[in-house]
Length: 71
Image (tube, rainbow, N blue to C red):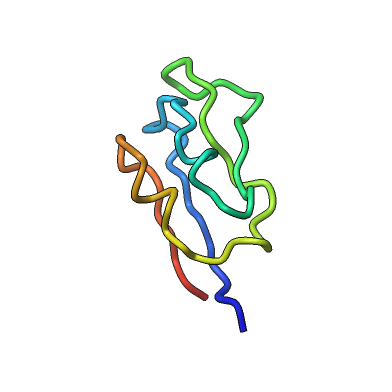
């Protein structure tokens, strides 16, 4: 049985590099259409039910603004 996960992204810390989008094997993330407080388009989880808690997004995030939890 595949693992289920939950992703929490701190919108205000994210600078919108979007490395996490490329690292996600199941395409849970995409760029937000609204700016954060720093003027960047941060990443957001759009299909959280597909998350497998692999942690790839967490590993590649240079700003340490992503938390991944296994449910």
